[in-house]
Image (spheres, rainbow, N blue to C red):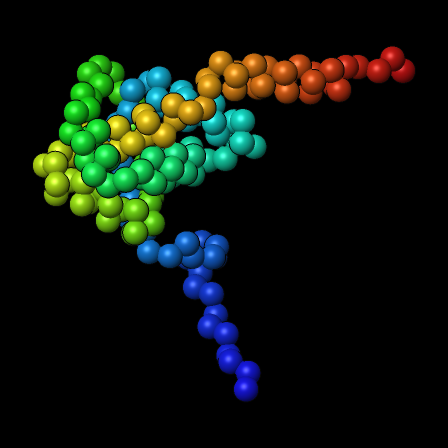
Length: 147
């Protein structure tokens, strides 16, 4: 007996839906924003929101008790900040909500910690070198040919 497949939900823009998600608008240090921009450029110019979602998801993969302890000890960045908006799947957003309930901290502080920790494994200097090498290779390809 053939089962009829459910049609895939589409967003208003006509793209396949990623399921129920929760949006966050937070402010980060310029260094963290720069790190996210570098990761985005190295990964074929992915949108910064996708990079923020990915690194936050990686950081949320830790043990809940360890996350609560680390977030509780976190001292937020003081100074000029830049904002970024991104979405998380509801399952991960619920972990952020639970951390908020457990610690009494704001979403801003929790997500600032998670994004800061999430970008740490990515070496900024190595990414800058890779970007510079790629640009040099592209320029080499575009050298004018004598006609």
